[in-house]
Length: 574
Image (cartoon, rainbow, N blue to C red; front, side):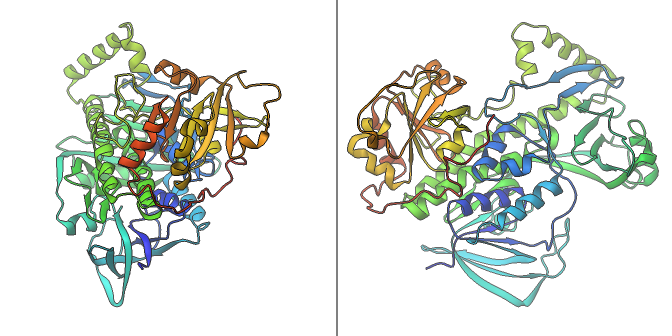
């Protein structure tokens, strides 16, 4: 017997999210973090609706979202304030706002505080991993007290007298861009490191002042003399980033005089506190492989995304979501460990696409040649007046969609372009039979979900229902608005264990219909809410599950739901 199901190295946003998801699914988890306390400064500033849906699965979305600045416009502006492009997304296809700005110390503190709800998750701070090796049954991890630990310092000094050895079935390295786990495995990273330097300045408002009222939106200031990023944050905080030229000296730009001069273009320097100033460069790289046996990489240890579209942290959150349910399937349901290979095949392309988009936006914003800047401005203005293209730009249509590449995901093959297999469905608020309105994911729970479109999916599955029950799946019928059956329908006991959900907003059923699915279709959602398959042939769905996920389908274990909250009680009304 191993000491833990999973050992996680790193307690940043990726490690915290993974620990929540594994803990909520009932696995025993050890988290090792070299720093004795949180950094205390903001790094990541933005999260989107996809990541918040993951946090919802982790049971913490409502807790962390109350501290966020939501629905802000994101815009590209000229040096004199003219708006070139403005992105606003009032629609919420996944229920959550698309644009959410946060203050990372608030986020990490709340994630850490809420993690204490799981007695099966143990967090050890100030512990450095000094050695590890794996065998057929697990991973041996040696760790010791870090003695010289400090953010930005990588001396790996430890107190040898404090060495401890533990065993875990799997080890996940979520220990950042300088990952010890990745380095000791000898895994290289491919991509590009950029020499361009940016000065980041984090500000807070002094007591009794209101210095940021006139800066309500996230601005990419396309000024060839000084490309700048202006980011609003909650809790009376604000961030500026300034693009340095090749001739600028780092020490000069981190000086009080230079920082005051730069921020003085936007705020009254007497009304703000400078919390941090730092000159940095950035990388756009991705690990050559993300898995070696029982050891996996996640977050910045697997890929580093430039900050220009705010997707670095969110990429790690998506990693945690994808990886957690697969580890749970292997460890609790006897799934073939080969399903862990799909973690990289599903996530790599999306992470790489985000990196490429971030690099493109950096190139767009940081033009320092006045002639090229003028050409860029003309091109942006022109694009907005081209039919279809303008709307696509305003909706940020260039952002990679939550859709796995055909042939590279765990699920039924996508037979046609409009196929929904391997995609993330909308999350409407649905109405239960008792009249209560809840978010779809809260109604379904955090495991597999088998949904019948105006039909009981168990009737379509027949004897195969037992296979899904062994996985702890929930069963639901979704009806179109006003389409619930009425009148006496016989023995009410036949509905025991079935969720009756009415799609009063019409978004989920319309989405199914647009993809060519009609009443009688059975839809299967994976625990990360991506579509495993949709078909009127329910037996085929079971065969594909057994072939791809649960080859030990004759396993007679009965698995109970591992939700931390009762689905019928969870969720908030719209």
